[in-house]
Image 1 (cartoon, one colour):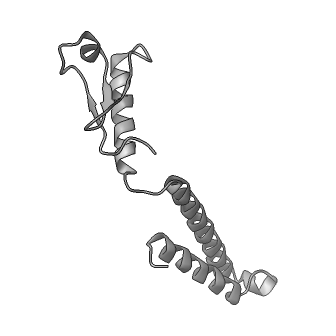
Image 2 (cartoon, rainbow, N blue to C red):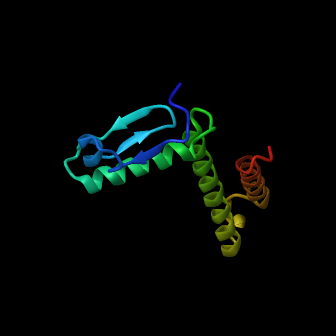
Image 3 (cartoon, one colour):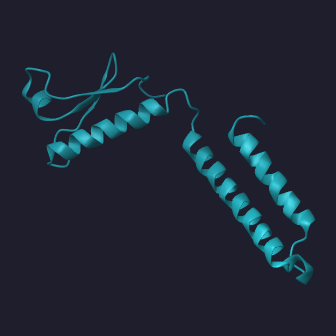
Length: 124
C-alpha cells in the first residue's frame, strides 16, 4: 500500500528554511518526500517533483501492473498492424500466388487486430 492520492508538490510556501529551498511532495495528510537538493539543481528538483506527482495522480485507482498492461497492449497492436501491412503489400504485389500468406491468413490477422483493439477499448 502507498500514500493515497492525490499527491501535491509545494515549494517556497513555508517559513522553514528547508521548505523554502527545495520542493516537497505530499498528500493531504502526509509529507511523502522532500528532494533536499538531491540533484543540486533547484529547477531539476522542481521538474522532477512535478513529474512524480503527475505520474502518481494519473495512475490513481489503476491496478498494480497497469503500465505493463498498456505496454503489452501497445506491442500486440503494433504487431497486428505490422502483419496487416504485410498482407496489404502482398496483395498489392500479387505475392499471395507465390506461396506467401493467403487471404485467409490476412483475414485472421485482421480479426486478431480487431480483437486486440476491442480489448484495449475495454469491450472484451
